[in-house]
Length: 211
Image 1 (tube, rainbow, N blue to C red):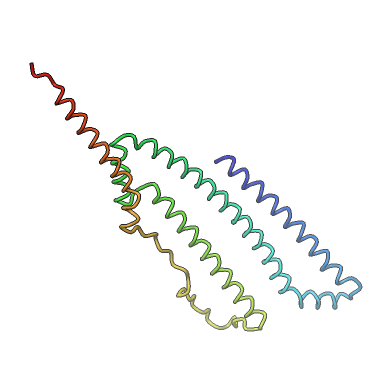
Image 2 (image 1 turned 180 degrees about the vertical axis):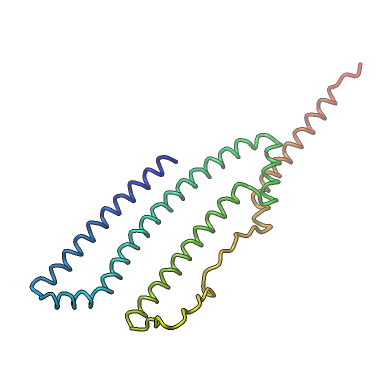
């Protein structure tokens, strides 16, 4: 965990350093464009381009946030995959015990297996991506409205938020087939254990000397 957090911090620091260098170059280019202008011309030029500059800065900042978020999501996914492999190995080794095989089968049928956490994490990641896309779309729409001069008058009452298009989170389902499929192997092992135990008991009974 500490190594993962260290990788996240290093990547985030590098990206923000790159972002600051990019902003510095952008401001140098903007300042160079006003060289030779009078103060009034410079002020008019800045007023004319201020909104576009703000939008450009916001886009650059959002791009950095998206890259950092994608990198962290990939690291978390890799970590979950490693944990899942370790869990599968541990469960497979534990199946040599009939009680463990029975418990795993019962957990699968009840929908309380450790894979439940993986399903919820995957669904939350998908919802997070959908929600971020929705927010970015709304931000772009507002930006276009401002550029078209359709800003709301300050004297008007603020419009109510329309949340009808807001993505809704849906918990992952657990169908009967998804519950039974991984339990078949455990039921097969339980059947084998039962046959072996019965055969052993029967042979012991046949060899028992009643004298």
